[in-house]
Image (cartoon, rainbow, N blue to C red; front, top):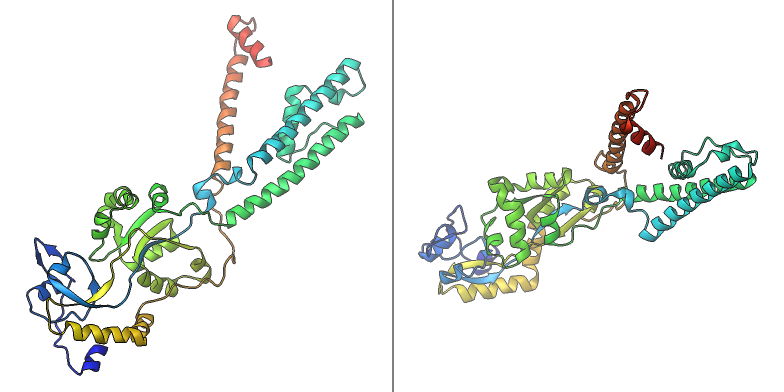
Length: 386
C-alpha cells in the first residue's frame, strides 16, 4: 500500500484463498493467477520457493518469518527420578559407607558386650541384622528404641543420628530446589522426538510441506514418530496450540510472531519465563511476487528497497508482527507438586507393602504346618531363622 502511494497508482484488488500449490506444473491460488498473467503483482508477499520461481518472479523481500517448537521445559520429575538427583555418586557412596560402618561398629560393640558379659543387655541383643535396621532407621529419621548403658555405644549412636540429620536436611533442601526448577532435558530435535511430550503444528497451508521436504534426519524422525501418526489431529489453531503449551506437557510448532501475539495476551508473567524454542526447519524468505518478466519488476524493487532502507518496512514489521514476550518474573511464585513428582516414593511404598504381604502369607503358611515338622517345615524354619 505504501508502494501505491509512493508511485501514485491504485490496485484493482482480487482476493484468492491460497498462495498457490503446484499441481503437476499448474498452480492454483495467487501463484496460478500470476502464472496465467491474470494479475500483475501479489499484494500479499509469500515464500520464495524454487517451484514457484519457474512461473513467477519476486521483486523484493519483505520480512523474515521464523518457525519453531515452543514449549515449557518439563520438570525434573518428568524426565528423571528426583530422589536420586540431590547427591553425586561420591556423596551417595560416602553416606552409605558411613551408615554401614556405624552398623558394623555397633554390631562389634554388641559382640564384645556378649563376650565379656558386660551389664548392658540392651546392646547385647543387637546382632548384625538389628544394627543395620538401626542404621536404616537413622537415615529415615526414625531413631531407635535402644538406650545403651555403655558410653561408647551411646556416643556411636548419637553421632550417627547427628550425621544423618545433617545429610537429611541437605537432601530435603536440594529436592525442594530441584522440584522448583525446570530441567534442561530438551535441547535438540532428537530430544523432542524421544521425549514423552505431545507435539502439534500450526494449521497453515505449508503445515506438511517443510517437514516432508526437510533433509535433516532429526526433523524427519520427529515428523514420522510424533506428528504423522496423529493425522489431522496434529494440526491446531494458534490459540489452541499455545493454550495446550500453557496447560500440558506439549510442544507446538508455530510462526513465532503468531505464537508471541497469543502468549503476550494470555500468559501470566511467570508462565512467559519458562518458554523454550527449538527450530525444526528454516522457513524461506518472504517476498512480493510479480508476473514473470513484468515491466514493473525493477521499478517496484527499487522503491521497496528504499522502504527497507529508510525504516518503513521495519515500522510495519514492528506494528504487525509481535515481538518475543519479555520475562519479568523469573523464579517467582509457587510451584505446584502433583502425584507424578513423588511417584518414585509412592512406588517404593507400594513395593514394600506388596513384599510385606507376600512375606506375611509365607509366615502364616509355615506356622500352619503340623506341630511335628516334616523336613520341609524344618528347612523353612531353619532358613527363616538364619
